[in-house]
Length: 419
Image 1 (cartoon, rainbow, N blue to C red):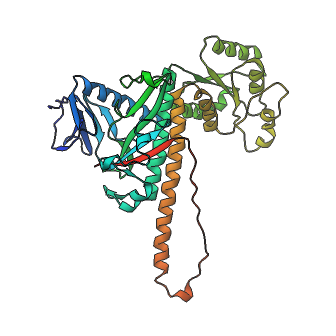
Image 2 (tube, rainbow, N blue to C red; image 1 turned 60 degrees about the vertical axis):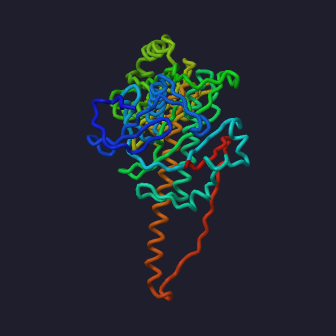
């Protein structure tokens, strides 16, 4: 089929699958055009049918899902939607493994345990993948890379599962693929996530299964209001506002003193209580924190203290935020970023977009530690190799032992090698 993105100069066709074509983009180095087809398949492409409009539905779904995941902080190959039926993506060498994650054991999971799908898409273990010693874009797929893909699969499933909950839809299972970015050599979520990639059960009812709608906007909005006792604390409050922005949470800064103008403090409180928008108040007062306790005693909204303590009197001043009368509850954090995260965790209970950013932060922190550990082990191996060149009588080593722990999860992850 002719590519719809006529304003782009297309290079050679890199690949063609059952439902899409991939073209090089000479004018955008390191990127490709993913062109969807008006085609549906079944039985591992044993049956093919043309469906008018299917390409547009698939492309729109994929674009929306990848945008949601990218905004949350998940690394993907997606760059931008180019047309109704095509999008631009980073050029990746695909890892030929389908990662299937299931909340409910249904569909092919029941058939494939312990089946092997007649070897069309044979089920693989992690050990088989590692033993295969795959190498894509110069990156060898080892234990670290498998762990990253496994952990990412669970996080991606949970983010999309949370996104469907406000629509009263149960995400039953999800199939995704990863690739290695040819420029950055990073493992990223690639290929597509469209209506063929998941099962959705409205109200948890299998008989109402729907795979042709996408409603990923959160109806629940919220905000953070930072109350500072003095404008001299503005730089501290700006850090809170900046951290809130990383979670997509609006943040407003106000100056008011519960000691010098309690009536104005309570008027500001009432102003935000009256418009019905869920709000978390952050009290920034260092020398003698009256803002936090006064706000906590006069509002049902959450209040958190974030005092800008000085080096000289900080150990004394902090007690005005910690020792409170009975009936008050305003936790204290000294970190502006911690105050923003506290608010995000509250909003994340009902806002899947905020929750997704929190979940992605957890994943990216885990991945960075995993990669740092891999780099350290590689450096240690090189150092040990160099030591081995020295006569043994000059070498002293301490023994060590490493242990690996596997976190338990209620999600069912299955791996399939794609032929």
